[in-house]
Every structure is written in structure tokens, then in C-alpha cells.
Amino acid sequence: MKLTEDMLVIKNQELAPGIYELVLRGENVRLMKEAGQFVNVQLEGKGFILRRPFSICEINSPEKEFKIIFRVQGEGTEHLAGIEAGERLNIFGPLGKGFPESALAEGETALLIGGGIGTPPLYELARRLHDRGNRVITVLGFQDRDGVFYEEEFSRYSEVHIATMDGSYGYKGNVLELIEDLGLDFDILYACGPMAMLKAIQEAYGKDKRGYISLEERMACGIGACYGCVCDKEGDSPYQKRVCKEGPVFGLNEVSI
Amino acid sequence: MIDLRIDLPGLKLKNPVIPASGCFGFGEEFAELYDLNQLGAITIKAATLEPRIGNPTPRIAETYGGILNAIGLQNPGVEVIIKEKLPWLEQFDLPVIANVAGDTVDEYVEVSRRLAGSEVIKALELNISCPNVQKGGMAFGTDPDTAAELTAEVKKAAGKPVYVKLSPNVTDIVKIARAVEEAGADGLSMINTLLGMRLDLRSGKTVLANGTGGLSGPAIKPVAIRMIYQVYREVNLPIIGMGGIQDARDVLEFLYAGASAVGIGTANFINPYVCPEIIRDLPGVLAEHGFNSIQEAIGYAHR
Figure 1: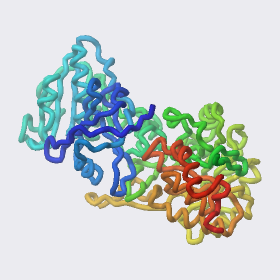
Figure 2: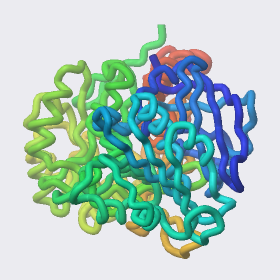
Figure 3: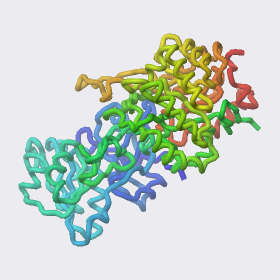
Figure 4: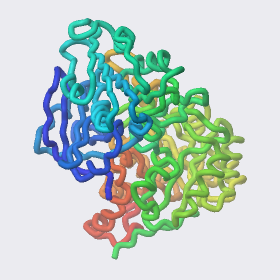
């Protein structure tokens, strides 16, 4: 059983300016076990060499389909935006460790914090935690009104609050300010977003809350062999954790940012 | 039946395909994907005397047809490698080549001595060509006298075949190859990465935190072919050829140039199953070009 597969593109559509939703179908979808794992996508042409890692946004096991959401940020994602339904993409995965759902006990409340393009892996998690019967609160932060996506989708499974930096939609400010302003109470947090956001979350909640954060880093192999995507281990010698292998999801205080 | 076997100093290879150092860790991650016994051999990640933490991130950047890396020889140190990594490799019927790095001649000698003491290690590969460290590395591989001295010292201490991994970042690679041949090297690995840099257009800064990095991938294949071709004509040492190999046809081109076996590096990141796929395809490619064995294709471009 190979972990690489030429999967069929079912849909690739723009959700918000520069933000795309890509649905793929393949046999290896049945190997996708955890929210927060990622796939390494091969791009053909234009001298592309490295696969591009994207976190899994939604797993639809009965249809053998899964979804990623990406932002056009460079030549690779520009190319990916031009891929159409019916084409095939070679997908390597699922890879890495995802968000542990079992960390959340019965009756507990989960707070999901997403920043911009870090939001997608939280969607599958929201669905699963909701299905387990837990209360789920989602706080999403974006630059402005144009950048907002998946508010309606998240609201199927959770209570959703949106913040924008310029205040053009929802709360004006960042996600942490919004959480404080609302006086949200929770037992455990799961977060994915820019490093600055994750660092602020560590500082705000690292001492007295349980939680998990998902990191992003430039990768090569995606399986822990090349040591390209290392990050620092809290209180130990640096670069001992590989984002692709021990992560991308780490305990709230497991890594220093 | 096409014969893929090849015997090199210390290495009885089932086939000429060897994952290259630094691109394959110590084999554990790829062993989850396929049976490592299919491989000709493996070259494990560079060992130094003490643990190395490596360079800051970003350590990886893509370029057209290649990648730049600046890992910085991150490794747990030779003792941990011997105690924790090598015993795991004993389960395979697979010659292991140990890549050795250091800051000083003494460090290379000591690391080589310790690794050569392990039953599982069949040969050493002297890394005198890593472009991503402040001291040692490439500095040993760009001067013929320094390279020769290091080779001779390691040969004295190691008692196992020594392959010297050459740097392409030199004016005349033949000079270095000759110098290490005279110093007693048993073979050559070539080429290591080419020193490169990429700038970010928004920030105006280097993409890699280290500034420079080593370029690998298909972009460097013609440079590797040219250098192997030149060295093969002037030096009587077996060559493990590497630099941008992606498929069995590339392997044949390296054999033509003068390589007796090949290292596969960056291609493992594009297709994690590339090594077994090349091994599967190689007999067909050899047959298609009228060869019955690896041996017949080695140095074909020089006949």
C-alpha cells in the first residue's frame, strides 16, 4: 500500500480573494485518521521540485474525498489555483500527528482559535468534537472582511466569533482580544495560525490551560528524514522536534516559538 | 536476465542504487514506506563527534529545478548513532556507508575510528564538501593538500574502505580527486551540493536563515555528469555518482560518465518511492540500450 496516490480533483474553487478550496478523491483518504494531519502535494511543471504541505480541512470517508484550503502566496500555490476538476494531483499522505480529540473529556468545552489560512484544519476538528457531544466555540481572525471564509461552515458545529484587524467585519481586533472581550470560558484550546498568534496564545494560556497548537514550516521530505522543518523544544536543546514528524500539532507548551 | 550486481571496495551491492547521505536520515522513516532490503546500500546522515544542533530555520528553499538546503549537519553525535541508530540497521541485509564530518582532522579521525568499529558499517564516506558549516566541511574539500592529509589520516585509523565525497565548488575537481587517490582513498562520491543563494523579493533578505545553502536536484545533474566524466578519465578509483538523479535513465547517464554506483538524494523528497522504482526500471533501461549488466555500461561514454 503506497502512501502516494494520483488523486482525482473533484472541485477547485475560490472561496475568498486568493483563497481556494480543493477537493480530491482517492483510496488513501481512508488512511486519514486525525484532524490536523497534512498531505504533501506534488506539482508538475515550472521546475517545481518540492511537494507542498497542506493541512487536511475535511475528511469525507464514505465518498473517499478530502479537502484542503490554500492561499495563493507564491508560484506553487498560483499553479495549484489553476488546477481544474478532472485533473489529477499526486498526494503523499496523510502525514504527521494531528489534534488529539481524546484530550477532551465528556462535558468539557473546546475553544478553537484560527488565524487566517491557519483556520482549515480546525474545521474537521470542530465537526468531530461536535459529534462527540462536546461544546465547541470557534474564534477566527482575519485581516479584513474580504478575507473571511468558512464562518457558515463552522457554525454548523460550533458557536462562531469573527474578528478582523480593520474591524470591517465582526469584532475589531485580534482573536485574543476578542476571546477576552467575550469572557469565553473553556477547558481546552486548539489553535492554528501565524506564529505571532500562537506565541501570544502560549503567553496568555500556557500556564493554566490545556491545549494544542499546529505549526507551519518549510518542508522537504515531509516524513522526518531531512531535518529541514525542525523547531525548538521547550526548555531543551534547540531543533529537536520535526514539524512534519512529531508535529505539526504539538502540546501548547511542547515547543518554544 | 540483467545483472545489477556491482562489487566496490567494502561494498557488495545487489544493485547500484544508494540513498545519499542527509536525504534518508538513518533509514527509519523510509522503512515505514518500503522494505529497505531492496536497496543496494544506504548512506546514513553525517556523524560528528559531538551532537550538532544545525542551522536556524528556514533551512529549505526551492529554486527552479532544484532545492537549496542549509541543515548544518544536525546529528545526535557519533556515540548516539552507534548505540541507537546502527543496531536498528542490523536487521537488514544492507551494506551501510557512514558519512563522517568534523571541524578538525582529529575529529574526522576519531569519528571514523569509532564508526569503523561497528560491524554494520561497511565503508566510510568522508564529507569534505558540506557547504553549510562554518568550520570544516567544504574547507577540507577545496584544497588538494588538505584533502589528501585528511584522507591519509583517516585511512590510517579506520581500517575500512574510505570514499571521499568531493565538492563541486572548486576550479579543478580532478586535482582534488588525484590528491585523495594518492593519499589512499578507496573510492569517490561525487558530487555534493553547489553553493547557492536565494533572495526574497519582498524582504530583500536571503530566504535561508543561513544565507547560503547547497543546491541539489535535477538542476545540477549536468555539472555532476561533467565532473564524473572528467575525473573518470584521470583517476583510477570507483565513483559513486550523484547529483539530480530522478529515474533509471539518469542512472544510465551517470554509468556512462563513469560512475559504478549512484546516490539518490533530493528525488526521495519528490517521490518517496523513487529508489525502489529506479531499481525496478533499471534492467529495462539497460536492456533497451543493449547492455546485459551494470558493468558493461560503466564508462561507456569513454569507449
